[in-house]
Length: 306
Image (cartoon, rainbow, N blue to C red; front, side, top):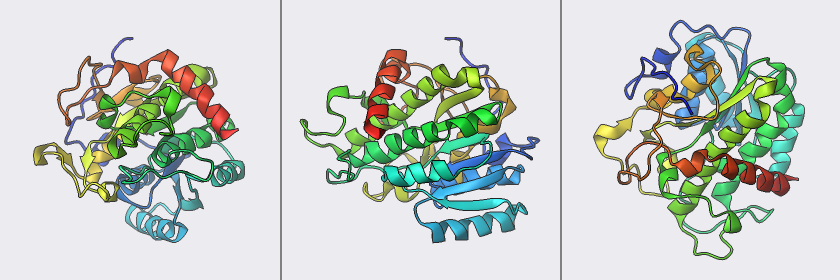
């Protein structure tokens, strides 16, 4: 696979840097989990560039407050809110069914991390896998027609460098046979998020739909509420504006036109590595880009949400 050409952006770039000169007028974006953390900044930057933005959130009132702040700061009044609970497949289905018109950018941003106890959805799925991957899988599949109508849609799947330590255990995705590990379950869900981008691009590129996975970096948000805060060395930490940069690059930058099935960090495609460099290193694991793994996971997920 040929490496994507280097962009002029990097670790310190912000979402506004990436979208400088990019006009998103006439396009529509959906950002999940957009009432906190990096999701807010992702939605704000897309709105500032002219996109109509929908915030897909579990807490509608929090979403409305966020939408109002985004509209006030950007002057873009086309920022709206829809209720979306990724742990509830009924909610995901209702959201997708209610969508009208084309969808140009889908940013699967929402996530949870390191739940201290094994928790399951009503359908029996392990909660981190369910929220971080399976709900987004169902949402993406449910919005396929809307994405196809855009005539060149992009899907962004937020992952993490935690995936480097956690290949998927396909035969026990719900931790029924192995001891539950909070960070292990999180890392597996993030491996699944990369594989989602790989398979969306393989299956739907003929319809003009491409997907990429991104690692936003280490940003202090409520994502770390179960881990006692951010543990990443200070020099490797980012602001929300820097964390959103790679997401909006994948969602909207003309530099990535025609690129799909890749993994980006620090605003550039990450190298495939054979061994992680500690807990805070970069790169993407080969098992996360493996087409056979992606196809297998898709089949399993399709059965889970049917």
